[in-house]
Image (cartoon, rainbow, N blue to C red; front, side):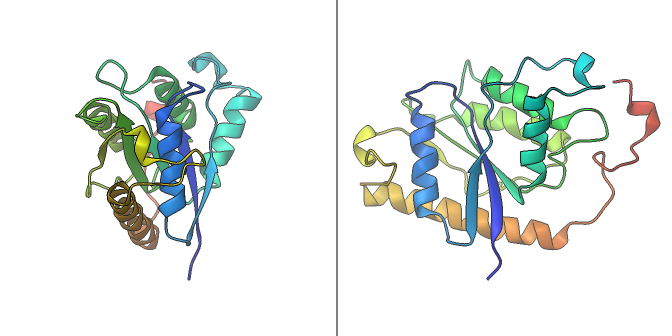
Length: 203
């Protein structure tokens, strides 16, 4: 059985993030062929093209971590009906400089939890637009908009409620199968290749 390295982002910087709880729960029910490494985002400065000529250590570490991953999982809250600023900043770092888009052809999954009933649905729609531009294939179904119930989780991140565990397990099984399909079909020829269209380099 092949093993796939999955880098995951937690979109919240909060020490009490319910999406970090969700990330632990997802890992606890994921198929054994997936190996997870968190890609940290809290130490990144705000991205500017001025950094493109000489990325700081935090930016290089982020891009290296994405490059080392077979797939990327985003576990994030929704802020003001969109992507949290810290996560969007990390995506900007990972996609630059132009022609070194680290997300290209990486199979991605988007999931999040919220105290509200819509469970990060609008954030996920915003993320899909960004990832489409970055040529990052997305698991489109099943969608997972999780209303957070603290009673469903143990302190170690394992899932106490079997109904919740079943939903999360199904999502991770589908994501694992999606990663396998995308990696089997990958071929060169996209904006992240070594020799991009020179006319786009000044964007």
